[in-house]
Length: 91
Image 1 (cartoon, rainbow, N blue to C red):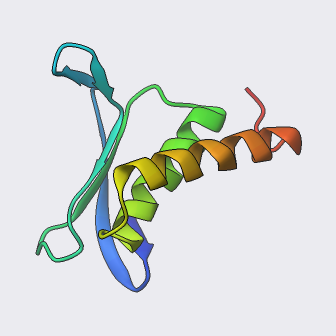
Image 2 (cartoon, helix red, strand yellow):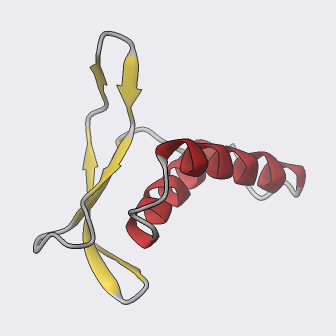
Image 3 (cartoon, rainbow, N blue to C red):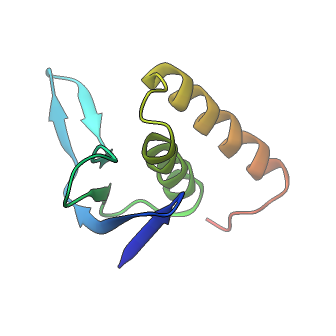
């Protein structure tokens, strides 16, 4: 599967979540838009609003590589909370 963001294409892949620095669980990652073989990856098992939040999170990285992790994390979380108010996810 291919994910297109602002006219650029990332190959989508599922992966097994992992932990770094002892307690940080990684559930998604995204290659730089300048890489030749770009990948956007999400952890297997994500569903509903958690999947939507993480997909948005990684797509924001793809769209705005220069934007800080803190900004993307907060915006994605706010989106999830707002979307849940509209019952967009059936979990």
